[in-house]
Image (cartoon, rainbow, N blue to C red):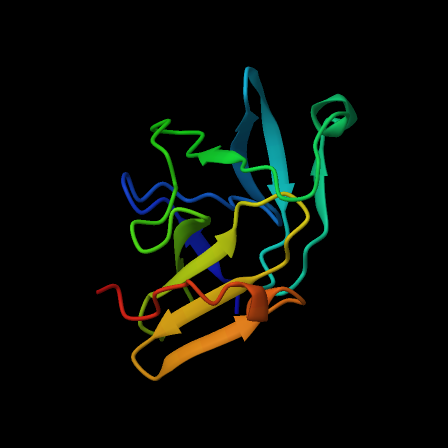
Length: 131
């Protein structure tokens, strides 16, 4: 079953093919980035020139390629939020770190939270309950 990722604002499908397509920015630079749809897989494809001067921990801006709205999570400003649906299941909220080089992903559903990545323990300030 294919997981479908959507913008939380305009609900556009962000993975019309295999990869998730987003716009990424840092300071005055912008580019396109392709992400794996598998939570916990941190392989990505982007223009090498975009990464040239990035340092671990730099805060990247992610936005929807359709509506251009920021995808920064309302729960934690260090994360990006998307909606993930799988046929026959309820929609899930997916949040991943927008800090360059930090691998942390959280998948929220009615059963709780699943965490992925080497840096989930460093995300102690993550508000799992949206309060």
